[in-house]
Length: 376
Image 1 (cartoon, one colour):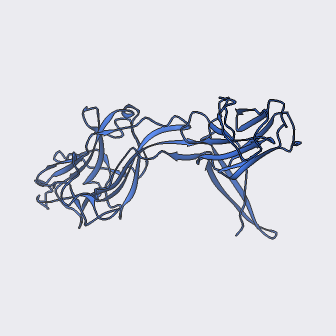
Image 2: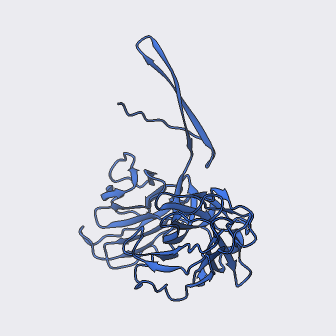
Image 3: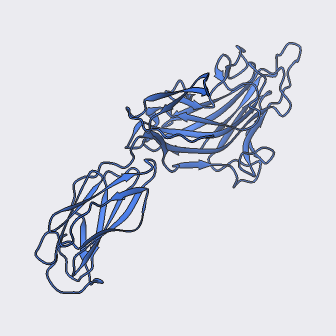
C-alpha cells in the first residue's frame, strides 16, 4: 500500500471527486473514483443526554411517560435485556392477541414521551448549521405491517412526525411504510419496519422551529395484531442533543486588538525604559518595540504550540521595527493555543494566542515581567 496526500480548494461544503488511473506496468487496470466533501463536521458538546442507566427497571426517568393502546401494545419500560450502553435501554414489546387468521382484534401500539427538553440554538460558525438529535435504535417489527416512528411537540403544541414538522434524517431514518390498517396508530405512515439486526445510530436534524424552544419527543410503535417476530418490539438508548455545523476553518479570523498586558518583575535585568506594542491580524501577531531601550532581542514560541505551526521571520536582534509571527492551523476542527515570548535586554512579555470553537475572535492575553503597567 502507499499513502498519497493532496491539496484541494473549493467552496466549503462542496464536493470534489478524485479519479485515479490504475496500471500494472503497461497494463491498464481502469480507474477508481472517490468523492469527498470539503470541510469537517464539528459537533458541540451535548446540551442533553439520556441513557436510562440510572434507573431501576422497569421505572422510566423522571418526567418520561408511556401510553399504550391495548390489546396489541405494552408499556415502554427500562430494561436490562437489551442495551447499547449497559445496563439499560428503554423498550416496548408487541403483545399480539388478535385473530391470526383475519389479523383483526389485536391492533395497538405504545408511546414513549420524553420529559420537556430545552433545545439550544445552532452553532454561530460554519455552514449547514443545525441542532441534531442522535439515539441508538433497535427495532424488530413485522415488515410493512408493524412500525416505529419519531414525533415532536414544540412548546406544548400537537405532536407531529419529525419529518412533517420540518426535521430530516441524516442517517438511520425510516426504511418503509406501514400498511393501511384502521386499528394501527401508524397506519399508512413512513416508519421503521422490519429488523435492524441490533442497535443502529439514528441522527436527525431537528426542525428550525425547535431551535431555542422547549420540546418533547415521542417514540411510537404500531402493530396490526396479526404477527410479531420473536423478541419483537422497539428499543431506544444513548440519546443526545447537540449543535452541529460543517467547518472549513474553525479558527475565526482574529479581530484587530491590543492585548491586555500586565508588567511584573521579570527574569531579565530590571531597570531602563521598556514598552512593547502588540497587535493581532488574521492568523498573526505583531510585536513592536516602541521605545528607546535595547530593541527587540528575541521573539520565540514558549513550549509547543497546540494545533498550529508558528512561523517567526528572521530579524536582527536589537531591531526597533515590527516583527510579525504568523500561524497555520493544523486541524480546523480543533482549538489553537500557544504562547509567544518577546524580550528586550530589560524585560520580556508573554502573549498567549488562543482560537477556540464558537469564539467570535482570537483572545490574546499576556504579561510583562516588571512591576508597572505599560500597555493596557
